[in-house]
Image (cartoon, rainbow, N blue to C red; front, side, top):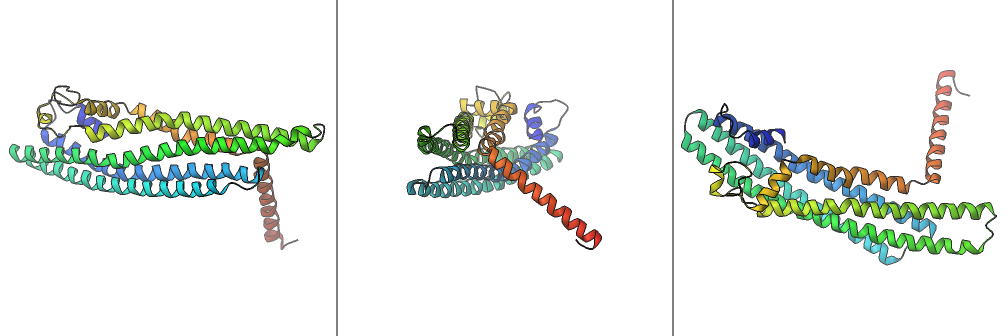
Length: 316
């Protein structure tokens, strides 16, 4: 991305030749081609992690409130299948984008060779073809971006639905405890566990909604900007810069702003994925789970110690 920024920001620097500019654009295109594939695969992996958290949330309901309704289980399978299909479609779409961007890089390389040989006409022709490839790539990448929007909206809806169902079932499961003797230790522990789990479920649902909503809005803006931009218009060759309103439409300007403001995208992605996953894992890891993990680790340490002692002293 650094090469792409440099190629656009410094496009009119007087001490840089057209051949050098074309070589920078070639490197930018190759890096963008690689990023197109890795980003879509990364997105699918992160969404699968979200689905695992959802499965864990449903698991608490299974253990705490009897059998889960058949509709919920079937709906969960449908959501997983839908996310898988849309994710594969996004990966395939970005694979096509990677091929187009690689071809764009090849055209910039040919333009650099033509400029270096002082063949300005051929260089301009290759540059014009590369701009057309850029437009095609931007419109094709919107396939993955619209798939991303669809997946994000589905995840938001499913988290809200599962959160509501979990809350209702936990309330009904612990409702009968109100009529029991609150002085008994087991009843006190059960009420404390239920209150803690309800709080964690509500916090997870609200946080996921608030975190995914701006990510979905950003994905919609990004997809529309790439689909409706006009970077490949004939005026692009003589435009005063990437923000020239006399040449580029509002969608191109919006995409340019997001491109030159990487901090905006970084903050949105950090909140919507890693931080949200941490919050969800915190919510699903109760005290009993942590105690179980600790006891399992202690047993493993004891087993390793006994095994090591046996191997060093001929056994016990």
